[in-house]
Length: 101
Image (cartoon, rainbow, N blue to C red; front, side, top):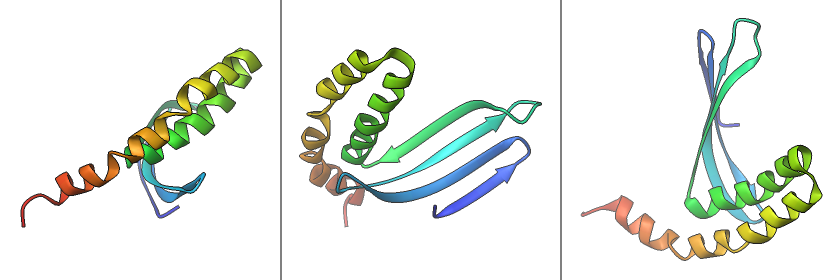
């Protein structure tokens, strides 16, 4: 974890790391209800190739627990091409972010 902030019932965590060899950084925002249980979660990450790697890995695990092995396997198989596809776009997005000058 890189940093964390809190205000009232809202907590934000900023992080960076590698997932399956791809760099990813992001921010998670948690909002709690009156009982201290998580009411809302917002996850933001970049670059898109890192986010898709994260979702491919986590999504299958989440699906396995909620919908079973078949759905998890289907999700993993259909999302597997996304990280390398989005990695092809990373140089272009870095160029766009730099802008002029």
